Amino acid sequence: MNTGKTALILGASGGIGGAIAAALLRHGWRVRGMARAVPTAAGAAGIEWVKGDAMLRADVVQAAAGVSMIVHAVNPAGYRNWDKLVLPMIDNTIAAARAAGGVRVVLPGTIYNFDPARTPVIDATSQEPHSRKGAIRVAMEKRLEDAAPDVPSLILRAGDFFGPGARSSWFSQALVTPNKPLVRIVNPAGSAGHSWAYLPDLAEAFARLMDAEERLLPFERVQFEGLYDATGTIMTDALQRAAGRSLPIWRFPWWAMKLLSPFGGFPREVAEIAQYWRHPMRFDNRRLVELIGPEPHTQIDQAVRAALISLGCAEPEPKLLAARVA
Image (cartoon, rainbow, N blue to C red):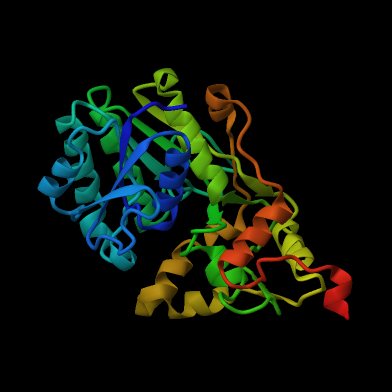
């Protein structure tokens, strides 16, 4: 349990940033959140909010004064202009960490650094990105590696997020329809072997790692195994159980995304990552287990139900199946 350290979270108003903030608060950290627009309920969640822009180095340096760690969970607004904004943002975070005395930078990692056709198991091996965002992600991690040991860092890589707080995710934007009861499931998977990360469990793993910081290397990459859907039906079966009845399962229209991708926008972004749904990829979490013990793990039905409730797709109080049928 941490005693009195302060973490600055860039992107604390977002899904992964907010989840990490909540986990760190549970573990006794003080949490400072920086946002372009400070949330109206500034103190409700225990976060000390400061106004700032991750693209302005002076803002980040000022917000990081006196902190023990910086969580870099910020992305360009609307995920636009990645090629122009993402690397300057991480450079500003590294500069702020150095100005704060060489505190650790924590980065949530993705699978886009890897070639899914050639990397069925993700560990700390060489990275071969096959997308624009993947190449940028590799460059981000290289900047952190080059900054160590003066600025130590931790990258925790995980699969697709789901659960409370995971706003922009395949679960919330494809499998189900927010604010509507389950009547069908749209399955993006083209084969078995997709990896999911229940956001509260992932955030808890971040907090436990930072409680054990003295055991971390100056530049540390670890993987969060999460839920590996080895059959391709684990997630859809859990959704069926949550609905209490058999639901039609539709295939995601990858063909339409490919057809429309030359016009840019959402179809291009989606078509670029289709390969990650066609090939099995799981995460080797041996280093994580070595550092913190067994991964935090919420039972799949409980996790799916919590995700559905947060999206307005299920009622807060469970009903008996018999009552549903009646």
